[in-house]
Amino acid sequence: MTIKQTKSQQVAADIAALLRARNPLIWIVTREEARVERYIFEAAASANYVTRTWDCAQGVVGFDGKNKIDETQDIGSALAQIEKAAKVDAESNYAQRYVWVLRDLPVWISGAPFAQFLRQLRNLSRSLPSVPRASAQAIIVLSPNGEVPAELAGHATVIEWPLPDRDEVATVLDAAIASLPDDLKDGAAPNGTREAAIDAAVGLTSDEAAGCYAKSLVQLKRIDPVAVSQEKKRVIARERVLEWVDPVAGGLDAVGGLDVLKVWLGARKSAYSPAARAYGLPSPKGMLLVGHPGTGKSLVAKTVSAAWGIPLLRLDLGALKSKFVGESEGNLRKALRVIEAIGPCVIWLDEIEKALQGATSGSADGGVSADALGAILSWMQERQGGAFVIATANNIAALPPELLRKGRFDEIFFVDLPNVQERAAIIQTAVVANGRKNAEIDAKAVADATNGFTGSEIAALVPEALFAAFGDGAREITTADIVAAAKQIVPLSVTAKDKIDGLREWAKTKARKATSALENEPTATAGRAIDL
Image 1 (cartoon, rainbow, N blue to C red):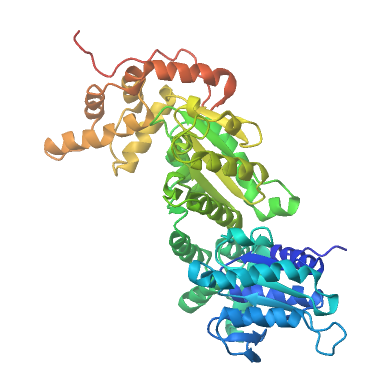
Image 2 (image 1 turned 180 degrees about the vertical axis):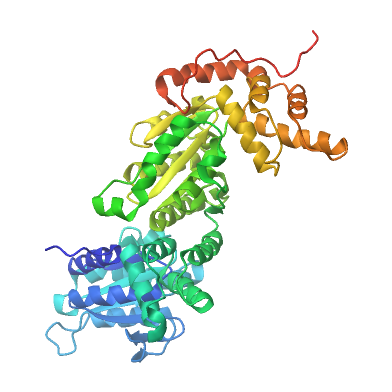
């Protein structure tokens, strides 16, 4: 029977193989020194190496941090020890195979003042593979970033250590509960909350997850998934590569119309249940919503996460761009790693055509947009996590054709102007959203008066009507107030008629309509008459 390995165990096995293959320099990208070092120790032991560590505070010590080998804090001294250990005669009783874990190396090999240390490390990287097997040495660098100096690029194997997966987070949860007094253990994770508590902490480091669980236990005497998610929100905000968005209350019921889209989304909600996970149901990849501005595309993104009970994260590609060479790509890779680790979530890419502008037609950003497009396409095709991507676009012509290929998204939906039934639903939703659920509004009359309006234009009529009603003695709004507000608007269907017609023509064969077709829908007209 094959035992399932965690992601970290798989990476540790790869490191053990690299050590056996006599790779001289392994560069591990991680912020979790303590957790990663435990796996390195096990990997080194399995490859018959003894682990030593160095940092600029303790010098060279044994893996347990107690047996000090050399208190010299200079990296040059540590590198000299590695060179000395490699030169021990293979027949000598002092020959020993060591893995040297260097914690603070990057700052010691950056810039002209430290050129000597960089050269020492490069010379070691060249010579260590040919050292006799009995005195083999290997160097592992722990760093929060993967920016390997160009001089070492040909020698270093770069590994991005994964964040804890669900099985590792479950171990952290069990450890947190085990630390409680016996009389509190049984109620620490009430029925049905264990899986939710694990999902809530996925995407955090082990220390962060342990801190979230500990805080929940201290405050509530139990593990509360909601409390863990709130703490997770703070941690994600700190990374500054993703924006945690609070979903719209009410879920998909807050969206008027779009019946076909809602049915499609409802069928995929079950994919995030424990039963679906046990069944082996593949996670849905996402959808692209194409339509005119104001038709509810962004609103759908904000309501899906509430309907499914999973986090909503906004990936702003423009905000990831930096003036420093390579930093934009690094920010994007970091964001994608966090998304993969988080597990089930909704990723919102708003107006994606603007973020990728210049990726195919050329731009003055030094190829940043093209690199971003390549990274996103590869990730969307190969990703294994539970992220559901909702991308919105107003101008389909500006989207690169590679993004529209099958496999990137599960479905492409065209969100048209609302039909008469949807307009009635939108006005009813907008009235309730503005705190006027007791107002007697003839939704059918408003729907007839707003033919050709977008959803946002219809929703905006209610605040306008409220101003009129308040100025008229603070009375309740009426249907007449809303219809009067509609007559003052020239809708988008008039001002951008050519663009709308072109998008509708494209959608006939390239996308699925988000709404059922209605018969005898009248042609859109302007909201007010204009004397010419």
